[in-house]
Length: 244
Length: 244
DNA sequence: CGTAATCTTGAGTCACGTCAATTAACGTGG
DNA sequence: CCACGTTAATTGACGTGACTCAAGATTACG
Image (tube, rainbow over the protein chains, first blue to last red):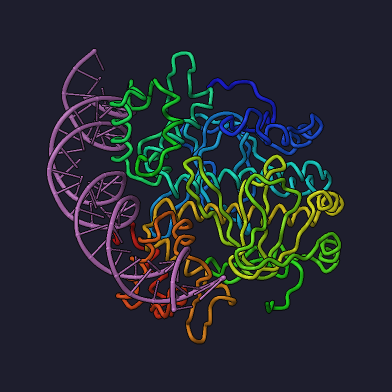
């Protein structure tokens, strides 16, 4: 495993989609002193591909920050189906809980490195440092806005558009996108993708096939795409649900 | 306008769906002293039905807490379609912003009373009171979980199930549900409902019609339902997308 | 009382889910 | 290195839930 060198909570994930400089990247940049204090209570955890970080229903004693890799956040519904709520990347946080219990499960989709913060000690730290406290509040607000974007996507886009949104997000991750060769590697199964997009593996495949026919992408293998028309993916999003 | 008497941030909205006592109701109960300090910087705002509280793109100088009424939170997408992100009720907060700009619009669906907090003064207050700060962090985390529940709903339930979820939520609001007569008043149009559920007005109507045929509800008028089988609505949610 | 908005219902079409079968990728042990 | 089993990916056929378009019915409001 070869991790890119990264400082603690390095630069929180920015989304160039909505502007050159994301708010989060600025607001959540912690002072070296704050980073040191966090590092003090944090322990480093390495997880291999497929490894469980925490499970729905477990006691939630920690929150995590991603240093390297990609993590899948999911939850099972009353009907037993799994929904993938989000994928998180370096700079993101995970481990929100409810009454001391994790409400979601987190699993590594690639070799991942995480900072693990005991909730008890973090609470003390937050009480002592209002600025740090504010950073965490801003972070939660950011995560809420991300969730709202997903509500927009799931509420009004068709599967092709949702898939395009996902691809455009993943392209922002240097660890998975080679911008020279325009090659995007998908570190997940069609099932994961389907559960994220709120559809079925078959439909994901069909949509990929159609995008290939239209010359937007090429499937070099099941898990490796060549992105031929990045701009078309963006334009896709501006259309109505029925193509209009 | 006749408002039920309520203290400031009275008891934050609890969701009996997921347990007798919601975490929020407990965690976010502010001390009388904290309430007083917040009331100090808050001003009371009354909004009539249909009134705009703030608009997407406006400068975000305030955050709001609902004292009475029902408010619709929505956003327009690149394709121009409107998505209703949430409905908020007494005890809820609204006004999350991004780089000083509101990302959503808020409009009153009924006569509403709001506490308006200047963001600048609130920031100072939070710096001085770690406990209050923690309450706001907990609130943001709660709102995130609410958003995640909506992701689950939109990702894997059919329209009937999504509608059932909405009705079950609204039944929790005493201001709109008469639990003696089992009458639920809908303070919104079919368009609002459709944009909330990620569907069309026509489909909403058809689903309501089917629920009436099945004896689950009765339409006393377009905006007034009799809930005949509250339990059936709950059971609906446990089925698969295709009825299984 | 008239005009506009909202709501309702119907007919036709399409996107997507389901079921089923084939092919490809991957790991394991001989 | 290859035979084999297992899982993932793909493709086809088919049914259906939900969207679109269009026409009434009802309600709200000046």
